[in-house]
Structure formats: structure tokens, C-alpha cells
Image 1: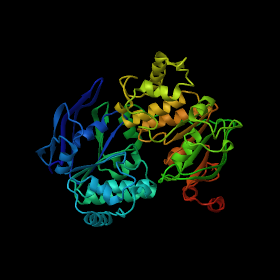
Image 2: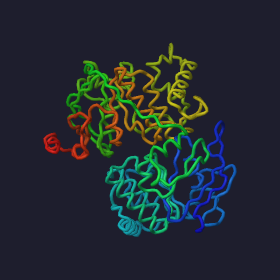
Image 3: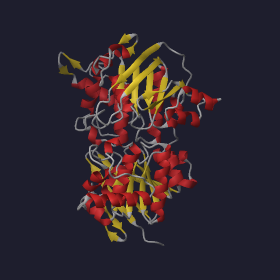
Image 4: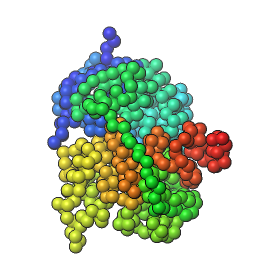
Length: 507
């Protein structure tokens, strides 16, 4: 028997109104890729923050390489050999790669030496990275390489990764997996959090499953189906979204030559987009991160203004209108960045509900907030979308990422929009919650709403979409029926191929 690299024994952590971790015990072996699975709110984030020194447990002990391990802060965890790649990147766009990496070092050497080490490590692990590149010019996958290389320069014994493939293309995922296998072969242990269960089955050697803060089981992923793992996570059978046939409705949204300058230096300009969307339709839009998804959502929501007739809602030019005016008409949007854009971190869920629902839910009267009605609406979203929180008075910051995502999407759906634009609707949510969100979007379309779903999850888009289009460099391909599209055709569309090239592959 080899000595466990990391041993957790009886870890418990409680917050007001919720027990995040309850008597959690398991081992991670050297050179093992160990998955940590669980629903949103199951306690995964609290647990890895405890290991990394961001959270102090109320009870229990940890051992690292057989010695007591209780880091008081991340610096102590890093010194002991524990590194972590967070779901949300912590990089400065205006700095280059080497400068960003230096910021994570206690005593950084000269830039020339850092650059040399970055090249050496990135080449060794198959993560090509130019230390002189400005971070704001990098793709999401390249930004993640920066975070990983920053960790690898610490020569960690344990690497914690939280949803590492959520913004990666299939090609970038393959590169990442090869890197992780090299680390495993070198003896580094990896604690891997992901809701993509087929990835877990492909990559991981072992898995521990949390439910409501407790360990409820373990498994060998390669010998366990994705459905079985999902059902172990939720404690019940998994709901499969049902896509019912829907009659084709009238055109509700039209884009005519939609163009807009990039909102900032590292943004993407929108270029001459033409599109019509009908009532009752789900239009799926795919694309590699950074190709204009955020800008398209902003142009539709009103955060970016355009010429009046570039955006037409039910025959009326609205390109010049502000977001709240568009909401009043029935055009609602949920952006990708939930913390700080879709929700104000330090406001309560009631206050966050008020921010976007005041007009459509009649939450104000004569200039005063109708707090009782606002609390009731927030409570209805929490109940309908199974948001795990003690109550509507809790802040957005207090929720796990997946639970906040459920709240944000539910808040918009429950306002009964005529058109709903969503960007990455199931980002960071567990399999059960993802299925529920997809079903809610299908149900919304079945009631006659038009849904524009922007996502990097192609399986998700093919599951719910009636038509599919791709964004590339701020240009939108002509939408095509989603049913029957091959992987090759989708790949061409994502790469910016013209319709004739896609049709040639089809033929």
C-alpha cells in the first residue's frame, strides 16, 4: 500500500443556514487523477478551498504526504506543493504572459528568466505559450494555459482544477488532457472537478461523489456510465429533456446588417449580421470563445446601441433603445458572466431579482420598491429552479456558481419573455440542473417565445436547437436546420467556412 498523497479525515465546515461539508473523508494517491463530483451546492468548492487554504474547517484533519496539513492561506498551500487552477481566470488583460505569471510568485526572478522558464515548461508539457503575448489577445484556451503554466512553475505535488474545460474547444481539451496525463506519469496528483461526465470517464482514475456536503459514494469512472454517476450525484433517476414538435410562428426578431465596433481593445466587432428568428423557435449559436458572443448579446440586450433598424422586434426598430425599454417590450437577455454582470455579488437575491424584473413583474410603485412582491418573485425563482440557498435574503456571492446560474436563468425565464437571449445557459451546472435548464428553455419555446441560445457546448445546442449558426470573428453564418448536421459541417461553420463549403461536405 502506497501512502496517500492527500488524506482528508472528517472535514466539516458550516455557514449560517447551511452545512457545506459534513464529515468528508477520502484519499488521493500520488500520480492519480481523482474526480470530485457532485451537484451544484454539494460542497465541492468549499472542500477544495479548504485544501488550498482559503477556508478553515470547523472540524477534521488533513494530511499531505503523511504529515499534518492545515494551510492558513494559499501561500502556505503553495509552499507545501498544492496548486490550483480556478474556474474564473485571474489574469490582467493589459499585461503579457510573463508579467501575469510573475504576479503569482512570492519572489519573482527577472522577466527574462521567467520567460525562459515559461517556454521550457510549456514546451515540455505540450502547452505552447509565448511569454511576450499580451493576455487580452489570447483565446480562452491560451489563457488557461497561462494559469496552468503558472501552477506548473511551482512544481506541485497536487494540482486542483475546477471546471477546466468549460470554455475550451474540443482541440484544446485534447491538448489539456495530454498535459494532465504527462503530469500523472510524472507523479503529480490531480483533483479534478467537472460536470462533463464523459470527460471524467475518459480521463480520471477514481471519483468521489458528494451530495449535500457528504460523501455518498466512490467509483472507477472508466467502469461506470455517465448516467450512473449522475444518478449517484443527485440520488434519483436523471431527467432527459423532451423536445416536442412546435408549429412555426411569425418572425419576432430581425437583424439587418447588424454591425458594431468592438467595445474595448480586446473585444470583437460585429460585422454585417443578418438574421430572422420566429416565435416558438430555438436558434443555437456556436463558436469558439472570443468570436463576438458577448458583443452579440450586448447588441441584442441594448448594452451596445446600434442604428434603429439594425435590430427589429416584432417589426419595430429598437437598435437605439436602452435595455430596460427592450425588457418592457419583451426582449430579455442573460449574459455569460454571472458574477458582476448578470448578478451584483453583494446584493441579495431579492435585490438581484429587482434589478432585471422591476418592469415586467411590477416590482415598483410611484418610485418605491414593493419589497414584499420582490421577495415573493425571488422566492418563486428559487423554488422553481431548485436554487440551493437558505433564502432570498442571501447575497449572490454566497451561492455556488451553478446555483447562481440557475437563479439568473430562472429569473429571466419566469418573466415570460417574447424573446430570450442566453449565453452559456448551463455553464458550470451539474448534469441534473443542466437538463432542467434545457427543459425550461424548450418549455419556453413551446409557449411561443423565441430563444437564442449561445453556447460552446455543441451537444447542448444539437439537443435543443431547431436551427444552428456559428459566430466567427464577429460574423454569423447562415442558420441551418440542426437536425442532421454532421461534426464536419459544424466544424467548418465554426471555422468561418462559407455556405458552399458546408454544402460540399453535406453532398
